[in-house]
Length: 291
Image 1: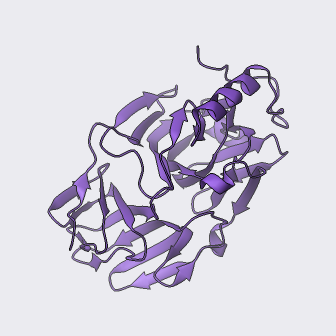
Image 2: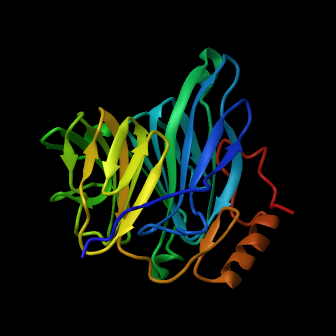
């Protein structure tokens, strides 16, 4: 039996400075997670004038993987493992926090001098309970390494996970999919049925998904054995995501995700005592623990 998609409402806006606005679409009260996706931010679009840029100072994570996917702009990643990578549109930064990592995200010097337009998605993927304390890792994947999938009227990039008979090279810990899709007007796309929970986020254009009409910056989610297809009313760009249901609820506090409240308390104490390690090349600042 098909279950109709549900529109996500009550997203929240956060201004990170210099007019860079982030819309937090997950979690919301009615939908805490979709597959392993526990946190979903739509960043921008924002035009940074010369001399301005993104400055997310060093901060910690546990129990999750962070994924950044850009449509426009460049972000420089540094972390306490010594990683240094500039993420650009079409490439993937996948950081597995596991037992703990600190990182920073900033506009690189050249882009800051010239100014740039910034637009993208950042998500948190909760790790399965058995993997919550794995050693932290960072992997950068260039655009050319990601599977391209063509269907009638649709062109897809498989960012992570499995879908439509393809597998991304990005290392994941549970069944999931994360896709950028471009649909021609009038085309139709069935979402991957091997995954029990699914979400659709419209970046540009307008689509219908069952009884739900979605325009730019809107999201809907659906769960069940079978799903209705997405139909593009206009040429559209979408993010498709989801996976297997989480193996239990997760607690989110600041930048920490865990199946255990006690583990989050330990992480808070560790960050307060600066036991996460310094971010190589960016060790003069950090975001204090919220009061």
